[in-house]
Image (cartoon, rainbow, N blue to C red; front, side, top):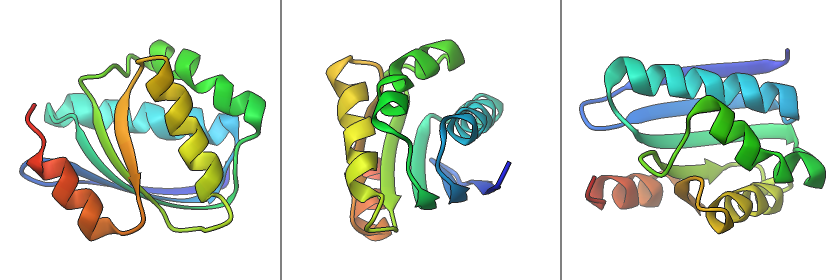
Length: 125
């Protein structure tokens, strides 16, 4: 597995930083670790930063709702996400659109961490 993952707990959110290869196996591992951290800290607001060297395929993107369901990720989770690689940003947005269209998860993709953090922390639980 080629993935560098760091999850830091703050008072009212978790900060997740991930870097590595974007594929289904890494995505499953990554989201599983996010769920474990959210449960541990009883915090479901997640500020994420990613830099992936490759992105999931379209078929893998369509598998994300089933992955989220299997991992127990529901709309109680709120994700504010920044994809720092312009080459993978479109695919990341597509994954979020697929999840939103199936009412599986709630989140938004941002271009910078400050805007993402502001949006996340201004949301009511």
